[in-house]
Image (tube, rainbow, N blue to C red; front, side, top):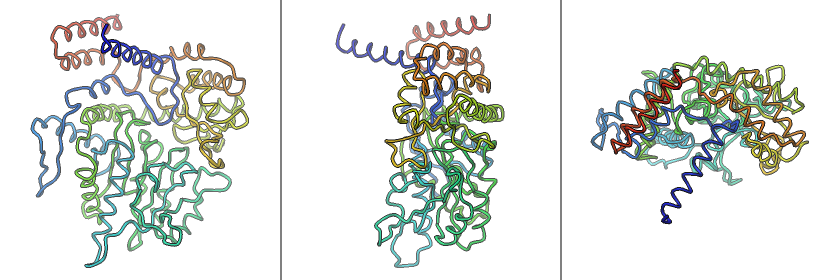
Length: 483
């Protein structure tokens, strides 16, 4: 066996083992992940993968710079239509390939937009003042000066720090905004941009409250909501456009069960004074930030958006029910849960637990992983450093998609308590329990999906003989399921 074959065999075996472990033996509770459906996965490896479809508006018409792009043009138009329907908005930009890039595209577009008001001779400037969520209080990294805001906000000459202020939080509940202090800070600092959204995310953001305060200002701030973690809960959790937000950004693979991409959505009806901002955002998407925007994942996003629009109500409702039930079962098993118990601990897919009295969050997360339960350790608002995290952050979205209901989380909560509190080894028990939740929901039933998958795989494989053999095997599997 040649070295080449050995390496290929080695890594194919590792890939297979990882697939079986992550998909069939583990409970994935990481709140920023999801598993796409079979057809969405296949779309990612279809012919558009690796192709180019650069395009931009020139003299009033959309110009594509490559041939062979009619199909992907139709895909992009259809995906925009599905997502505009999902958000109930006027505009969607699909070319960012991550949530962080989506934020960066907005920030760069806004810098260009505010500079359109310069008087002759005035220097090009950055954003004067931005308000966001504190990173240590759950704010998302991509909305920080060390993230996508880098070099896009003016500095205070006295301190050398960026002019960024944080949405204040309540002393009795650091997961909720302090509205009285927020009103005072808005009037004092007059930010040009307010960024809502978090990564440690259990409650609604004060979008409507801020909109009512600033809507009549002569130069009101742009209101942006980074919904990366809760994009798949748009509507049932919070509908920012209905509350006055101008922009929604996010990644499309967390609660929204699509491919790994980013999206910018805007609500700028005809006559909106911010319509030019949308044009500037589009220009920062292309050519400003990306060329090849990963067309295979764009095709997958279209299919997942169709799935979401079909199943959103059932999926979103079950996610919220599962999260609250899971939080309650964890508390009943002796694990401290963050948030207000009177409010069910959470309004999203996330549950935050405090594990400090049982060990360091990093060590607890590794212990859970060794028992086939995947989470991530999290610094809570009163922690001094992420390396001494006292929390664990979990989400129910992926296991909801694999069919778990409220009562199913009772056993899982007990197994987690066994690991955290009693340091028991329950890995085999966890894997046995996972076998009950292997069939994906909120998409085409597996039999129908296999029939379509066999056709798609046959069209991808270059060898007719291999394609026919694979199609035959998949057809036999579909028939077996039907019988």
